[in-house]
Image (tube, rainbow, N blue to C red; front, side):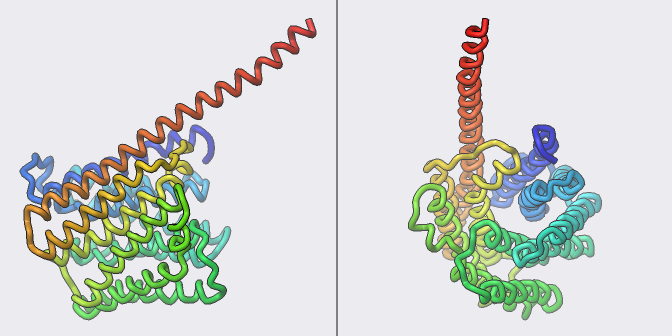
Length: 384
């Protein structure tokens, strides 16, 4: 699965994730109370699954399929992307849920094949994330409401991203103790998500403790606490990572200290601390590495990328403290608009930077080709 033909297969799949992102952001504006045309009355009801699995799940599954290099692995992002589209068009119907579940199964198959090539703790964590994706869809198919799926959806993102940090970020050397502590934290996270399903009130405290265990491991062993003193892309990535870890810690405190929540200001704060403050920040800072590998087009780092990252965290801070915490409804609403604007701004920056870098590389290649042709032409003329 290499070359321009492979990229043509990937673009439509990435497009389904893009549609899920746009639809999820629009649904978020509806949930904020803005009087906007609603294509479907149920669009707001699928906001969470569309964003987490339809968008983020498709991106992760597509990146893993590219890493495997087998065309059949594209079934995972194809199912999650198609499932997200069905949810957007028809609401929480059975076909959409089944497609999302099939995407989780296909992703587990991808990890199984990757495990045969090179087993490791990082891959185990990512496979655990895929299992959490599948578990969330099974519970949804069983009739549980979306708020009860949140711990498993959070586990999908947290386990996957923590595993990728271990794989991609060259974790600070911790000897043999680092993988052992990582496995202990991962076990606590999965045990907590399971406990929430079985004993919702008590389990939520355990799940919060599992999140805090993951954050503690990342705080001790992740290289970001060193690269924050660097420059360029490493410093930008470290800033986003450390801010994301802080939001994940806050969500862990909310769950561990406050217990189960399925509605109200604490629910809003907890949810968006995980899925915006943590997960979206991870997407922002990993995009310059992941997207070029998927699309075979450069996405260079530029300081302008700090603007959407800062807007994301500042607007979320205002939303959680003044909106959810102080009960200032208008501030909460417009801070939510700031969250949406941050994501849109980042996508715009990525598109513009990628397009400019692509044109520049094309010109450079053309210049090199012309320069290489001139000596050949001169040699031909001399031989004549």
